[in-house]
Every structure is written in C-alpha cells, then in structure tokens.
Image (cartoon, rainbow, N blue to C red; front, side):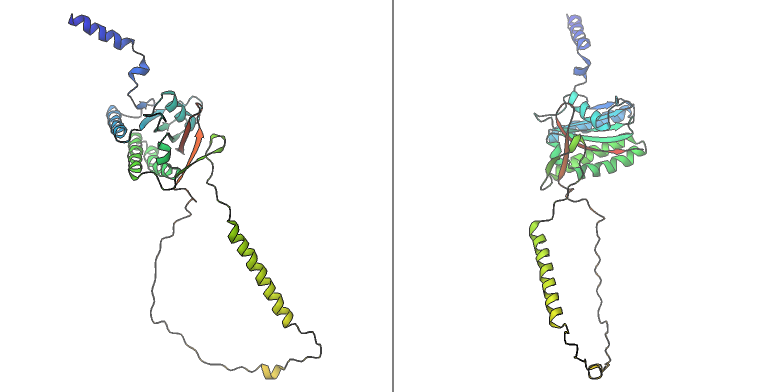
Length: 270
C-alpha cells in the first residue's frame, strides 16, 4: 500500500508542467553567473522581502535576449510569468543582460511609487560597480537591499507617474516661467526706460549760446580715506553639482508589449 501511494505522488510530480514546478522560484540564472549558494541566499532574501512588503522580486540573467532590448526583455519576462503578489502585479525585476551588455531594473504596480527615476539611478550606481567587475551575485544583493531601504523610507513626497513617449524614458520636463514674474520684468523694463528718457530730455542742452563754467566747476579736493579690516568670518557651503530638476519624485512609465504599465532604468556595461 505504501509503495502504491509513493508511486502515485511520484507520477503526479513527473506529470506536473515545468512552469508549475518553478512557480515559486524567483532567481533565473540562465547565464550561469551564480553559484548554488548564491541562488539559495538570493532566494532567501527574496522570500523575506515578499513577506515584509507583499510585493514581488525577481532576478534574471541571460546570454540571449531574443533580439529584444534589455527593457523589453525584462518587462516581458515579468509579465509572461505573471509575477506580482496583488491585482496590480506589484514588484520589480533585476536583469543582468550579457547579450545587450546592460543591467536593467523593471518595476510595476505599487513598486512604481517607491522606485522613482532618481532612486532607480541610485540603485544602478551600486549595481553597476559590482556587475562591471563581474561580481554579479553581489550586484543583485545590492539591488535587493537598496529596494528594501527605499521601501522602508516610504513613498517620496509629491511622487507622480509621468508617461514617456514611444515607450522610452522621457527627459525631465522643465516647467514654463510663471506669467506673473514675466509681467513684472516687462513692467520694470518699461518704467526704467521711461525714467531714463525723462531725465535725458530734462538735461538736454538745446540753447547753443550756453557755455559751461569749466574753471569754476572743475576744482578738485582730495581727502585721505583708509579702510581697516577688523573681523573676518568665512562661511562654507557645499553646492550640489547640477541636480536634475524635479528628479526626486518622478517615475517615468511606459507600456510593455502586454499592455501593462512599467517603470525602470538601465545602465550599459560596455
């Protein structure tokens, strides 16, 4: 009887589709960049984040992107496997694409609000340093840890989604100059010109018989003046180098081939 039961479960196991067997896996090392220990540790970290945040996390490596860009490959991989832990498919995917020589982070659902463009760029900074030195597992760990930190910080104040054109990242948009200050500048210019021409006309010498008393008006008296520096105070302030405008709260989005809305960003390894 025991043998029959064991045989039954073995048969069921063998007949299950491979996709079902791999449904719980979130680490797809198709480029064989990770050791078995790396995969186990990444899987444990992902399980911890899933329990903590109720969002999904996927790590993928590939040597063949099927002719797609890193963005399209990452978005399609996430969508085609129906990753996500809610009705919005909330989560992120980190791709190490050695075909396109690029690392890429794809986001969707609630994750769009936590991982703004600026935060993704920061994650890619750390991930790139490791991936460029072929420390691929460390690169993935940096991304997972960074995402956890940002979720702990919460959604940035004023966060908003901004669709890009043609499914690509749109540049940050500069807001137009407000109308009120522009009117003030024009009004000030008109007032200045009016005052200038009024004074010019007032002192314009139209009488040709007028002679300026040169000798009486040209005397010069010199006096001695001296400035002494008593106290000196220096104030030092660090000035940031050209920060991108409005970059801390914007999430640029694009549609994937399945029609879902994704955010994300990538970094070339070349």
